Length: 419
Image (cartoon, rainbow, N blue to C red; front, side):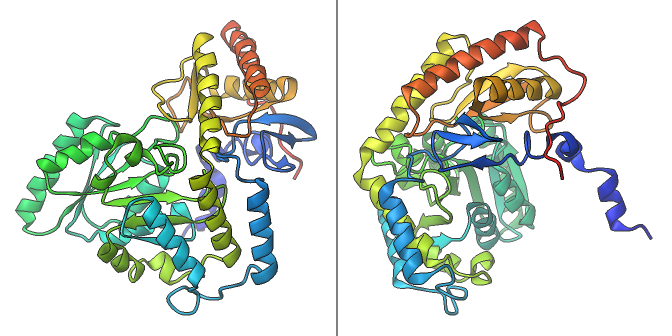
């Protein structure tokens, strides 16, 4: 019999294989200081484009005050226990009611984490006879939720309505053959890698031809899209057609937690059947009270969203004017597509950080095909015009170096922390 650990140490995986050179720099980097447009990395001040602090709420004085006061009153232990047993409170129910109203739904349920929440939602509502139809570029949390599903699932090409309808036809035929079960379509309000919105209006329109329910994960749209910030459904004018609306507090709210909003009877079913919440400690009171304050600011300070979009559009316009490919983003998420290998990408990242003091996220193989590089820039309301101009200059110069072959190295630069 083999030792299960033997296989693990022989193959650390496509990303883990680089850990000895990458840890603490390209992977698991440590940013120091207050969350904002500028932070310190290895002692140097950087313009940071890697934080999902969209509205700049992480260090908003009213948010810091609410967080501090709630912690002083309740500590992090309260309420103690799972909500069903001993962990419920008026504040938890107030936040659920306010979120439901904000999203124009009958009810909402709080969850401890976004990743865990969407997985458990799929598990709670879909049985073995149900069929799931989902977008090919759905987030990893959705894919992991699908792994829990004992029934059939059909994937459609990203934002391809023709293929989506084809998969709906397949799902409908299977349901008819089985004589039982239903169909759940899952997509995203904003796809976090490419920044393009899901085609929610068109998917909702397919309800006139097919019988299905629609679950939308709008992690990047909540707080950033729509007239009031209610998300991609509001922006596209189809919020009523979204049966279950899901989002996390980890993006626009700069916090921890998540929620699901929808019809009261369905939310109540989920409340009594979602295993990850029934068997987990309740969301601590400081997070709940802090999220109430964040939601209040999201509703009452539209200038935060306006500033976010002003920065995002300025950054995206500047990149396009300089010949960069930013794909089809129609959100604030700003990808930059380039050509090059993993080694070139890491050398370029090192140059950006060490010589230009720009810190941003990079995506390479195996997440995307070999020979491709994606830089993902996340604008926030906290960034300045100076930040944007300095970043545009840095990318223009480093792109020229990339094209000229200046970053061609044999291996990933060894920048790992000593461990």
